[in-house]
Image (cartoon, rainbow, N blue to C red):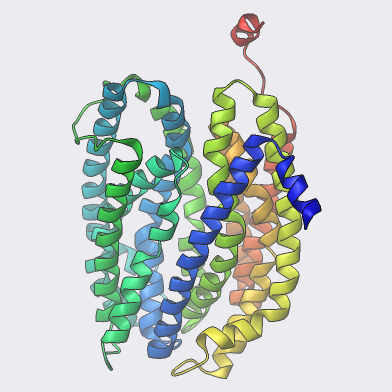
Length: 453
């Protein structure tokens, strides 16, 4: 133990910053995942693998994919910008924040309206394999998920502000919608309709948005009154970078809808089986890898801001290798414990032993992605801190291509397990591409070379 403590004390300060941030994120994620697991247990008890869960899983995935995509692209581009602006005047920061909030308010309202308008076509084309009653339930659930599209953008901006200040409480607040759903489902007595899921989702997103906005204002010391315009110098280059990132994020965001579409055409309740397995898998993905990934970006961006690109690259590569090994260990442990874990969390009420076998089989195939997913997250943060968004977008497009192809090849013969194995192939390609790019340092512009001492 003393030897481990001495090694930790001997780490560079920036490594310790990532480790401390990762520990906080992991702690908050663990608490949040417990809340999510409790919600899943309540949903499994009340609904089992049923049409209601099919409708909820389909609606949640299809309605949230675009706002979540935009938030993902915004975070990757915005956090380094906010880190670089730390030394700017308070008035300059407030002007940029106000303009950003105004733009997102308009975008969020438009996105909520667009979701509502196009949903009949989404059900017609994406949900053609669903039963008619499932489609009716999905249309009802849209009363919650259309406003949630707007709230997701505002919440995402607050999360980026907190992460730029190396505050990670937003990770814990991600569990608020799950807690609201849990409360609504448990208090709804014997109501097995979609109503508890609808109201729990809507109230949860509202509370999360308001709470996180208040914490973000406290972290950076300003509210940033929303206004329209692009007059802040911080917009320079950010819009182009965001556009490139959105292309890659949109490509990757189609993975969720493709999985839902594929599952919907496999037969009744395949969406529910995929959803239970995916949410269990997210417990491991979140606590194990997202903690380091979320903590690394502001630190790497700060090291880049100081001009020490070589150290930032070396740090990211070391963390990536360590996470690759951790992912391999997690895969082995998870494979052995998968049936036990599914039974412990879900096997009660309407969720049967046969349901446990089906979900555990899909989960085991999904666990094979852990080493690649763990290893690639830090490399993603490295390239983001370097501003190499074009390469990131190209890799994302390639990932989407291999995922779509493997779904087409594997799902007909392997069912839901084939969808999971296709995701493994996607992350294996992603890790290989990012490692090859990160291994070689970015080219230094001639102007920068001339000013260096």
